[in-house]
Length: 74
Image 1 (cartoon, rainbow, N blue to C red):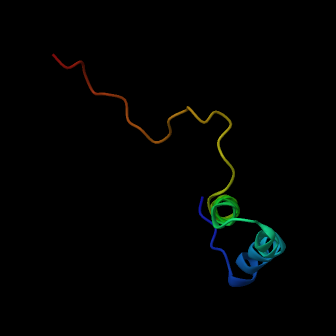
Image 2: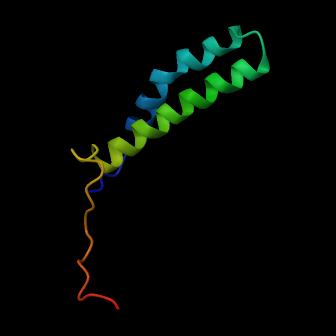
């Protein structure tokens, strides 16, 4: 089930991360800044994906949409 995300919903999700991104300027090194930015952007990406695709299935190992084999292979 795919839900289209409108611009306002995306901007609302991004606005939640704005303060965190601005707080990264307090980091002492570029490495710390980059690591923090990567974590924030991954979290934002996960939130956008969940918003568009829905929540994860209960059992993440369960396969969906696959057809069983038609017969045994030799």
